[in-house]
Length: 79
Image (cartoon, rainbow, N blue to C red; front, side, top):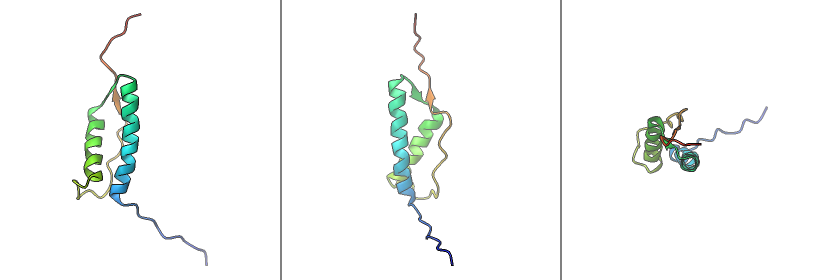
């Protein structure tokens, strides 16, 4: 009989904490490039933070990462 390892269930709060590392990376990139988060990204950050800190106790899955993360700066450059 073949061995089947048991399924490992990662708690949602742990998944959210991991997602926060990705958010931090995106925030660093946005700051370095003079960009800001899109409304979708801001909403994602709010949802992930609520799950990670225990404020949201009803969610059973993480929200999907937004595809549009950053909005280009409105500053113009001259050459």
